[in-house]
Amino acid sequence: MLPAAEICIPIIRTICMRGYTGHALPLRSFNKVETIKIMDVYEYANGEVTILWKPKICIHSGVCVRTLPNVYDPKARPWIKPENAASDELTAQIAKCPSGALSIKGES
Ligand code: SF4
Image (tube, rainbow, N blue to C red):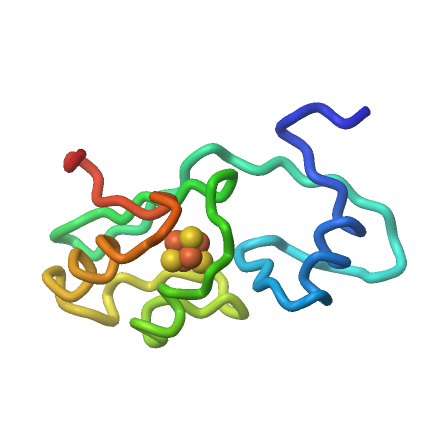
């Protein structure tokens, strides 16, 4: 059994192929079994605010991608580019995240 902090890439790929957006996962090869470490929290700063993203509670609803596509791009690395929107736009969008996976550092 895999440790909780490791995710089996083939399982993630299967989930993605069923319609979920498997953003921020470095999917390298469809032919190899790999495991990757998933951090609890990732930080993305624009100089004014720092976005926190918790991949383990993200439900891949895509709300962020549809609301601010210039900031959230599952195909890009990093997948969140907070410099592409004003801080108040980021804050308003983050309030719409249905899982609570997104938040602003220092705000509860
Ligand atoms: S809106 Fe929140 S739950 Fe939905 S994909 Fe973005 S981070 Fe994940």
